[in-house]
Image (tube, rainbow, N blue to C red; front, side, top):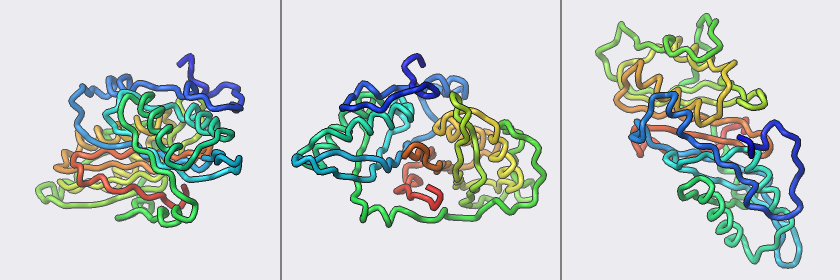
Length: 273
């Protein structure tokens, strides 16, 4: 954490510097969740970046929107402020073409994460089709009393009246909030849950998601904890948990964890991103 620029005064770099990237090991969070190397999920962390720019060979600025896909099995996540500083260090660098930028980003990010990172740079006119609405049933109007604001897995429960019935549901809430573990700044997001199994009580699921409101942790860790808690308490046959977090500093982070690869779809951008 000594190299972590988060919460410290920093200066924007005047030249390209790949050493600005700071890796954070995933292992510490997974140890607290009781997870071994044999993970109970597969998944990805999908980042979008909106402040990407470089110069062409004539010194004319080029701009793009970036999508970066990190496999959840990578040893490291990348600290978000260091990622922002790294991307901004490209601003005065000259490149022959967009593919040269992609190649450089792929090499640097893969080295820092410890696994291959997929990089796509969209032209601005291409990015419009990315914005969509969440799928499924919104939980946010469920009538429920809430008084827990730290993660409380005991709130999760199946519907005992239909305990023997196997259903499929896609549910989401726009009310999710956690906090940065370093600066305590709020992290807002939409949390989506798909499952196949015994019916999960909607009131309990909403109260559980809201219980993260005063919790401090990184986006990826919150999604993994939600996945593990639902799997343990509700025993679904299939499960996917996706967090679409609002952008901050020109970046949004969208982790998805799933029991089955076919449940991991091309991730959209939601309206608040």
